[in-house]
Length: 105
Image (tube, rainbow, N blue to C red; front, side, top):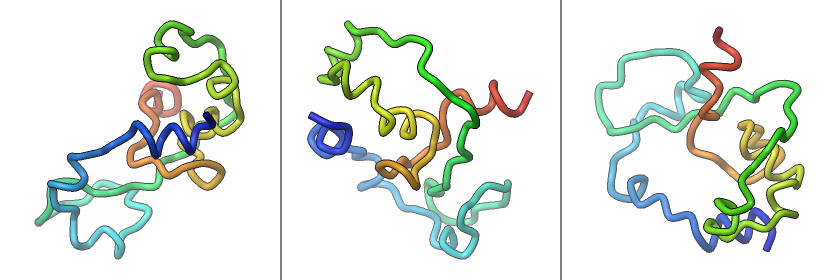
């Protein structure tokens, strides 16, 4: 199963279905600067892509619990997904988790 099939089958962002998005998010897209949000529970952002990335290690055990194969984990699509490069893979709804530690410091 490739990353797109896995995402469709297993990822259900229920919070995005029950919470209200900021009605002005399209006006400010890609929403990468701080601003006051007067209405809504969340703002969709276009992630900042992490530069020059490569896979150092992943846990085969954890991947298997998430129904992700070794081929999927080592794929370019997964690398793009984990690094926020949504133009080359499936849409993500948040900035890559290590962004603040790897790029902002």
